[in-house]
Structures are given as structure tokens and as C-alpha cells.
Length: 167
Image 1 (cartoon, rainbow, N blue to C red):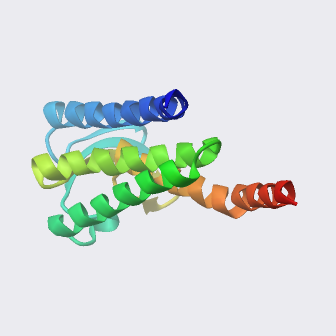
Image 2 (cartoon, one colour):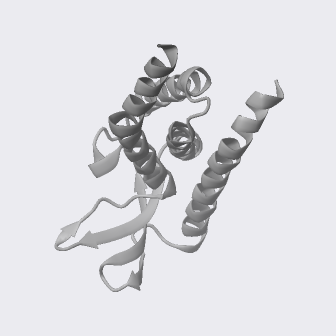
């Protein structure tokens, strides 16, 4: 029993830390900025812009809260299952799942409390104004990227090693 709690503790702390940072930054923006207000951090290339989003990235699916609740519940259930069934001894998989769970919960908190997500990171890449996002969105992106890298490159090697050990 102790072994499972030890492998859960570091990822759990990381996940809680990301959720805490997400909620803290959103509250700072909510309490100190008007919606639409911007503060330049690095010229026009990086700004803190107070924004509210009732949908997903690029403003798609505005107001579809029930859909987002269902998708979040499915993602959280799937990540929990994969974590307990597949992630033992696989730190990269654990980290990817931790980032995904943190991002999903961070945005779920906003959707439940405010029926929208508080976004504020406003980035201009060359001449493209990227959709405004938040810490939870960044965590989701890091989690997905980590899982893609894991499944493309590391999972195959681990399965090869398991097959060789069985022979």
C-alpha cells in the first residue's frame, strides 16, 4: 500500500501546485483588471489581457457547459484509470497525466463557479495573435505533448523491453 502512495505523492503535489498556480493567477487577473484590459509584458508580443471564454480554444462551442462537464469527467476518469493501470514505474506517463488532470480541473473549477474560463496570457507570434489562454490551458498542452512523445517514442521501447524480459 505504501508503494502506491509514494508514487502518487510527487505527481499529486505537482498536479495540486499547477491547479493552485492556475487559480491564483486567474484570481489576480479577475480582481485587478477589467475585462478587455491589457498590460504589456514584452511589448505587443506578450501581454496580460483579461478575457472570459465560454467555449474552448479559438472561442469554439460557446456556452456548451454541459458538453464541457461531460468531456472533463470522461478525461479525468480515463486519466485516473490509465494512471493506476499503466503508469507504475513510468514517470513520463505519470507527469503527462498529472499535467492533463491539472489543466482539466483548473478549467473545470472556472466553468462550475463562473460558467466561463478566465484567460489572460495574450501572445503575438510573428503576425498571428494566438488565442488568449491560461495556466490550465498551458498544462493541458504540456500534458498532451508529453503523452504524444511518450507513446510515440518511449512506450514502444518499454514494450520491447517487457517482451525481451519475458523471453
